[in-house]
Length: 360
Image (cartoon, rainbow, N blue to C red; front, side, top):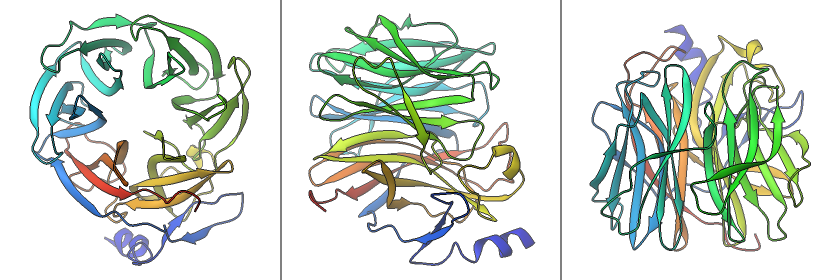
């Protein structure tokens, strides 16, 4: 138990948390300026409930997530819940498409609510889509895009849909692509965002002028990367994000852009530029952090925690509700010693986070 005593003393500080450096050689104590108004469990049944997508459509909230026996188990199914108030949820549908169904993605349009299911079967991913037009019946899942890819966080921009599509594998085999669709079913590649350097989950954000920013998770370094491209989104310019990015989502509410990601707190602290291989074995705590994205920088805004406990966390998803955002994220229901177990549990939480006042 020596590790708990040594690594947790600074984490219990009520006013500050330790983040890895914004630039090489620097480390800092940061107090996020906002606290959640409420955090409560949404799903907790002893199963591994995680990797969620939240949407508001036709006066209801829709929550899709993977339910399995463990984080790395291969028996996941996709569950869709529906609620009028986010407090009472009823099951709309459960999907067992192929192998381990995970990483749900919801896309809202006026006529349809699309659900993308990323299924891992016999070591290879494929993407399926199903949709509903009335909130009661769903179409049969149909395969979309190329085998081997995961479709990530689709968004609408000027009448088209865009998403990041990444291909898992070895470092050199990995790639992140920008893909687009006009109907949510037929997707085609626009460009390669980055390839051959350990690419993973890639989340998109359009600014008011149409410039596209991609926030990319790295499987090589602790920190992720920010890539930018002007229309027609064929040329990308890269820089380090200065933060760890994983399971992340990006939203713009009332002119403020928020990125929500897993927060990693290493002991001793790790610089974002460090190779992941160099920090393997360090004591590690996790939580979920809401950042604001201002002038090209990610700044801590609201911690959804606590850090203490060394739990798996995040894969957050959010919708706006008045003057706040509703954030759903997962957190393990137990402690673990640095390795995922074949059977473990995770709960889904919902946090109410006040939006930042415009102009601040």
